[in-house]
Structure formats: structure tokens, C-alpha cells
Image 1 (spheres, rainbow, N blue to C red):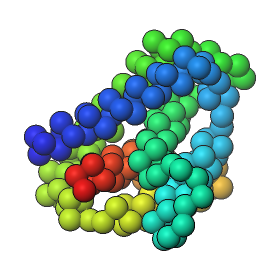
Image 2: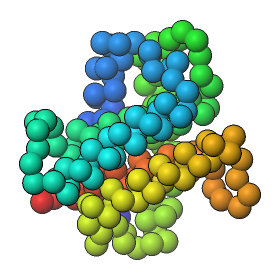
Image 3: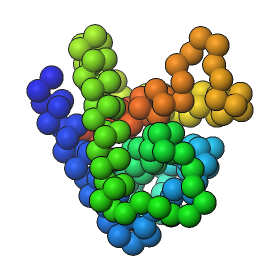
Length: 179
């Protein structure tokens, strides 16, 4: 699992670097987004990945990698929004947002390590297309929970679903790099 941890960190370094650059360009404008808006952004990216995987013709010169990075960053933003709440005006410096980003990544990585231990790195034998489908399934679950005002009877909450999506997207990026 040592390789997985290093590979995970390398993917996160790429994602965090882009997050910081976008913070420099746009500030924390994303802080005004409500959770359903973030969920919809993630959904758009996951649908595009599925389309890229199913279609022979691409009309936009961006592949799966940039979309998986987007999924990771939007999920981290959603986890920050869950913790901090939505605001009416951007309120975070790049440094503060980066600290919150790193905090959510640490929590999510710990979840991955625990599950990876229990499942024996089963994701390594999965296809990228299956990871995409699992992300889409998690998104549909999140949408349903959002429609239920965040309430569940027996299921894990929205945060766990966002964390799983981060981890699935990271696994997909590791697979794509290993091709």
C-alpha cells in the first residue's frame, strides 16, 4: 500500500496546484456555491468522462485526466462547504482555502487507506470505466439525499459520498497514468 500512498499524494499535488492557481485567478468565488450547484458541476464532468469513454469522436481537445482532476477539486470544495457553510461573498484567502483543502484531503486519504486495507486494493483490478460509473452512482445518491434535505434513514451522508468520489477519481488517474 506504500505505492498507493505515494501515487495518491502525487495526484493530490497536481490537483492542489491547479486549485491554488485557480484561487489566484478567481479568488474564492466558489464559496457562494450551494451544494447542489457543486454536485451538478461534478455530474457534468462525470458525464463528459463517460461520453469520452463511449464515443469514438471527440470535439473538444480535453481528455479524461482534466475532468477527473475537476471532480476531485469540486468534491474537496463541497467538503469545505459542508464544513464552513455557504457564504454570500468570497471570504477565503488562498492560504486559508489551501489549509481547508489539505484538511479535507487528509480526512479523505485516511478513509481510502482504511478501505484499501479492508478491500485489499481491489480498485487496482477495476476498469476506469467502472470507476466512472461508481462516481455517477454516488452523484445520483447525493442528488437524492439533497432532494431529501440532507436526511438519510440508514445510508452514509453526503460527505462520505464526496469522499468516495475523490478516491475513485484518484484511482482512475492512477490507472490512466499507469497505461
